[in-house]
Image: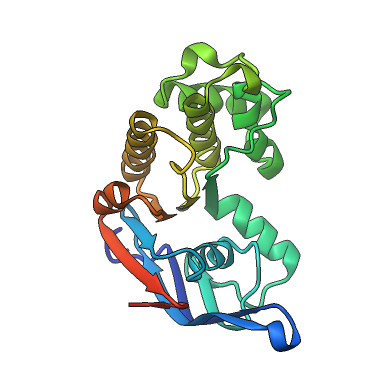
Length: 229
């Protein structure tokens, strides 16, 4: 078996993506290739509009590229059906966005359990036990039964991290995960995300405008005008 460092959790090759129609059609990604290894944290940085978030959504199988290929855990996903891509996304990928997207009418515990319910692998008791463990790991074990709207912004983003880790995905994709937080909470959220991911051998790919956050990642990939530079 290859070591974690030798394994590739996610890979894309020669990715192209166009957005818009007719004269307004824009070539957003122009032949991007990238690979991510378990236990490593990657920052994709660059000016607004350079294609960072577009690439992240393609890697997360939330959108389809116009050309090129994507592999998740060595399985080529580019030509898979929507149902197969949805299943792979639920099993292999966790998402953390700038805005936490918690279901405000549900408790922190229920929010963390939602991806597990969708995947359907664990019993209700095991789902609750794992959700409680994850909330403990982000320092919110005592707030498991608080509703989303009863938590601060930093706390809600920490619940979002726990939710992203719920199904033990191989890959964490984070789009400006600290962009809506103050300096103190930004550092805390980044530290938690990377610490937990490294402990679990997960690849983290994050898009950020924050140079302090980027400089604390293992690898920085600057992007401009739809290509890595």
